[in-house]
Image (cartoon, rainbow, N blue to C red; front, side):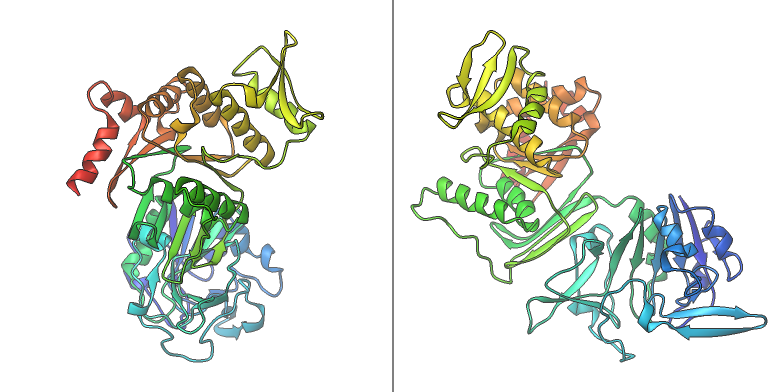
Length: 488
């Protein structure tokens, strides 16, 4: 990790007297050459809050052709505090400086609240951290120039801190944020004269180590709960009944804003609670769900959703996984998957006469899917989801209820671990699910990619597959999760 700090003219702040010894110091004439070396794995902190023309050659060049935005596009990270980014541009003419206001052509084109007033918009105690702010251990201070949004926040923005409007529940103010550009990010913190310099200089490491997380307020049984998630390919949530395993899956699905997921959850809740009328998912403004996964941030407050999460599929054992039948192309893709489980399968098709999906075996045996065992039926429907939707995040509740034979279960986990672009989150109380997921991970040398979340009453800990492998002969991690609840 390489970090440099730019020091030049200031509007509100100058933290250049606190630069750590291991950080390079750049001036007006040096910054261009430093940026020109590329952005991947490199951090640029602005110690003063006026942008130099040698880094941002606007309007002579288009914004995306300036050195700073090329640096971002290449994977660099810029950290900014103080006055509005890009508002003042410092131009160097021989022995004097000219500062030009740039209000009408700000490259990050979001509405700024309190623009004309040079004073506090919101006090620090009015501002909340998002789950990302908590992961970064950010300490909000007074906000002077927050961004303001109504209902929708763009996909290229990750919120660090926020404040809801007291009169309009659809309006949200955002003092600190991360703007994603190309492979890089522009990080905005401390939008006032009051800057914690030590925190700003600690941000490169914090951003390098940034994990994922879910934050829930007044959702189901969770009053105020944050779970920090180390990155993994497969996350298996283990815990006793009623500790909130399913609620965590539902929170992710609801945060995606996908109405199909809402309908699935309503149907599942109706069936599981055995009521005659469909339960409607309606939340008031006290219910807040936040999810930060796959470098995407989503928030649901009541029925308002701000989401950059997309293509999230949730699967329950008691309801159909796919409402529509696959087309012939998808059947071919499913067959390629199925051959890994059963070499005798020849073809999969929808029978026009009975409108059921059939399996045709190589010995010409023709069987309706509804007539095969539940485990095999579940497997085929799971493959339909994967081929039809190619979900970015796949949520599977109560995996043991799908009745997969142990050999089939191990192969399913091998398949899930082989998927390139899909994250999988599963809930279970089953020793078989724990054991065969661990076995598949060890077999494929992916033991660090399977993570077990042992959930108690708003308490948790993690183990990876290698750690589970080492303790399974002596300890059942289901009992470990249960004891966390008993102790609570």
